Length: 366
Image (cartoon, rainbow, N blue to C red; front, side, top):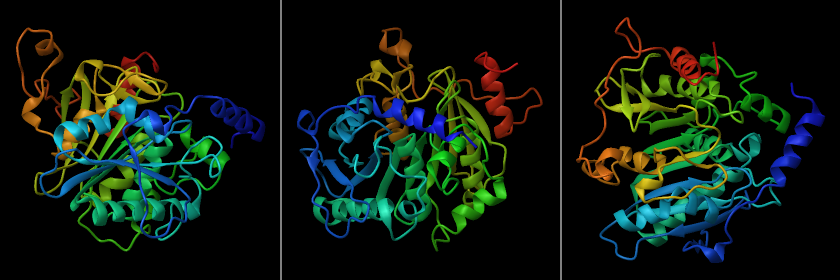
């Protein structure tokens, strides 16, 4: 376990970092929550100016040291929502709850169904459904780091609410119970085995299915949340989603590897996007027109925001253009031209092999 002095030093460094825009500098509106708010969170939302029928909703959770407006500006979610006609909800942490503005994914009362921060976010979603024309069948959630871990806990504790989730540099549900344990899990230390991870998911709610789809995004050079957490997330979800340990296939997505698991019906239900050489943050593409670089908002040539929304079907897939096309050398569709297995044996690699090979390619492992 990490020494207490090391934990305190890390917390002090985090607290000194800027949290982002003030609410007055964004187009987000404050949400008047109908119902309880035991987690004492603030909600912000945006709906498009012109709407046609019930709207899909994307719940977006910021990372530590960030706020809702700053993360929204960096990720580009509300700009994308305005262009394509869906709603966004951005719950926001306060320093009264957590000095570093982290969602408390490691505190059991805050990640237990019916209490704490997960219930507050559940009540915000209910408000969006009742007051703002949201389609209850098309609700999605995403988040970065602590926000990614909390998004995963929402998927675990209220799976019946969500059609899909996307976890960026996040962690499995229920693996830590204190700040020191949280730092250890972030480093990849003490993560439970697959059976225990699946038990933590199975006992988080009475739900028996169907389950939301899950997308995992991870940088291979992330020194804040070790990429072993990506493998642990896959292990936590593959039992409920009914998929085997190895992915069905591997595709190339804007130059990065996308590993895909399909269920018995052939539907894509789980995927892992490994961004080679990327550190800790949300991957962006400045040429996409959505989002902008900032601390933990990383312009690495692939827009997680656009691809996640496209994977959920809330923006059209046929509008995908390659970087070369945007430069004027032609137009191409969804970039899956390198749809190949990841090993010479012809079989897709295991999660462990995928991550280790990515680390070797990035020069981080021999």
